[in-house]
Image 1 (cartoon, helix red, strand yellow):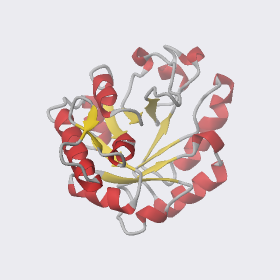
Image 2: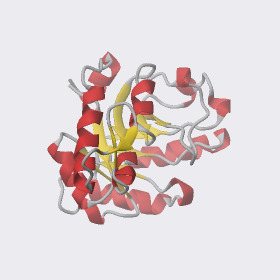
Image 3: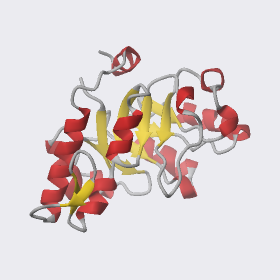
Length: 222
């Protein structure tokens, strides 16, 4: 059993990743690249968190019936009740729905505040943002949202990781760089596709042997 890995990029990237055991991902704003892939009960439906549309999200979830989707980020604790109601609707169409806590007022209170029906999602810190809620607060299976693959793997030592999505390596591949299992660096031979393949293989390697928590096994139905 392995942590589920998703990538949301182009048809080409998803095709290559799928050959290495990954699953398709897509934002609800762009379903074009997943038309040729099995997505129902397998895919990851991401959101446009900077300009979120609940109506478009629900419509896309109903259309694709993903394995996992993400509810609107909880940037203010006072919006939590509304977000949970939205997540309850999404749960009608997605097997799993993850809540993304970002307000530090939620520190140490996730078990109390978020119903057990929902997974949690941790927004991996990058220059574009991330969560400030303490790692110790994440008390149940977690989806790791974005960030560097090495950072994701380090976080997994402190969390019960169910799944990850990772697109960072697709950006570096455009410039001839790849993830070597430790860091991003120039590929010795180069080529976009070669960079993609080697990055994916090395990401798989760093997750090999990761101890899946019993709570995650139960969520996976194993």
